[in-house]
Image (cartoon, rainbow, N blue to C red; front, top):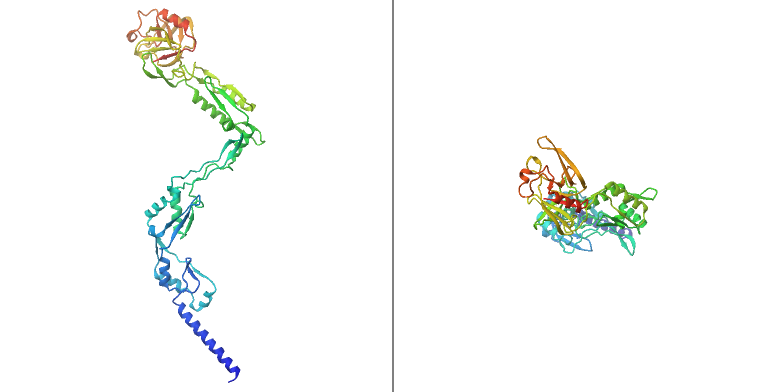
Length: 467
């Protein structure tokens, strides 16, 4: 046989074998997925539809990896939350029949990827419990985020950077993990998913940077404010808070913040119209003051105080200034608060007056206070002798509309409505229950000699406590 004939027969045999192999392959891949075929990322190469279905539904080795801060990594196994994938064989068969079995040789050299929609379920309560057990939610050493702030370091103000914290937000963490499961992901980073609360102020915060710049400009400045018996010292951040940087890079006083600061001082140091503890001569602990007729206590002059502080701030140098007061008390933190230990005490129930000086009773007397009827009772509260006048004539209108006039030798007003201490020579006696029918129009009636003693002894601004 000729060589040409032998070669032809060989080629024919190879062709026949190839054709047979191709046919066998086509037949095989009509019921099997092609080589290098993937469904939802799972390798189903050379599998039947049933085999692929079993693979896609198998969750025994599946878990969700959770990355937390401080290099903590945990897993939630799908079996622990009863995670189940719901697929039917018909769903996989539709994918299988969509491939061309005649093109099976092509699958040997390139990947084929299919995306098949799936339904899944899991035990939500079990998932919630597993999430709550995560280190980022349950560990004892978790930290909250810390804002960046300014501090003095080696006599130089610096920004201390923010700290992120390691305690995650429970509801955000649960939601992020549910989203990861719904997207069939196998890993989630809680930081990337924004499950941690962020610091409100970072080192790049524009306002913080501005405050640091101001602090550098006033680094050596201290402003002390004399509050008459107390002192407020402003330096560092508290002082910088009262400045604002202008467009030309100069510093000026922030009027809104200065106003707010003076309002704080007023609230902290004003005592007029406020209650304070008081121990009576009888040893009873009571509260006095707080009424609208009070005249004793501290009352700041806001306008003058604000101007004084503004001027000192504009000078941008260390200074001590004093607050201004419309009404001044004698002290701040004595035994009876701002009342101190020199005062006049009047008990309406006892119809008696005690005059204390440096904590000792130097004089006492019975009195007659206002008539309880017709709204003429003596007001109670914290008052002061704000004036003294010899040989005055007191005038007014009685409850029935009639006019009255009473000359007195010693007049000591204590409020702004005409109530005061004075002698009352027309009274037959003092003390007891005489005030219930011989009571005054509201003043404190005194024997002439008692009024003289108090007039000559009590200084202007002496507290008069009435209860």
